[in-house]
Image 1 (cartoon, rainbow, N blue to C red):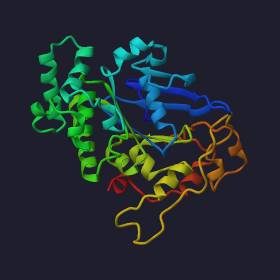
Image 2 (cartoon, rainbow, N blue to C red; image 1 turned 30 degrees about the vertical axis):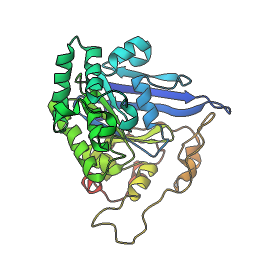
Image 3 (cartoon, one colour; image 1 turned 120 degrees about the vertical axis):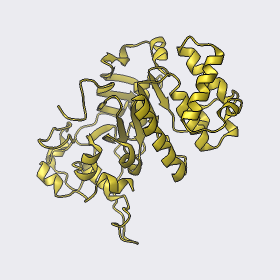
Length: 344
């Protein structure tokens, strides 16, 4: 079995497809996605905007748009398929055993309710506790996420907090019921680098203390290098490569992953003024039936075999990648990087 999966996985996504209706036909936003997250580990799902990262997370949470369809796949939480649950059952699960931190805390927090009311509501929705007990838990969580004067903060409104503090409040809210799985969708995108580092350190600290499994969605490979245990690289709705963080950075196999890594400036390695790598072309139109490798038109190694549908392949002594090339050919085109270099 590949080391990115485990029999004891908190979450396993298997062959997931998500389609959105358009006037020209269904758009395949997510196609044959497979993911696995073990207890106490961090899976980073990485890829450019529009690749299907957030749509996958919304499918897991049962928050897809009403018009969206899931024609195939399973989303197993401790072996139970979440796609079989009704909205009432999903509502009982969300915020309790599975929680999510959304990308923009200002739009996720209700502007007309205090921080204390919003934090307390989460716990009282899922636990039989008094208002006093819920507020005590809110103070405890605000202190855990590094917010000083936690008691005073309970009476404040979201607009009275900075972006960094609002994000910490969102993390505290997600942790109110000590979820087994925490999904974080670009949790540091709108924050400056100092606050970003603090938030990432906080997530790791919480994970160590509570044993939470974390699925972190990002397009920032520096973030991936700092926090990931395992990585899934997505392109045009598909996972094109998955492995441990060190495998992805030091032994990237898919041409798209290699292209992404060449775009990163590395301190002490990238010469001042040197041109960074680029990936030519544009993402394909995902409306209608898709055949062949979705990276075909942008890949410098494309050939006729790529016109057929390509599945994730297991390679002996390596990790899975969605490519028809021999592994020896893949490795001759790798950038010389490690996870620690990218994280710097």
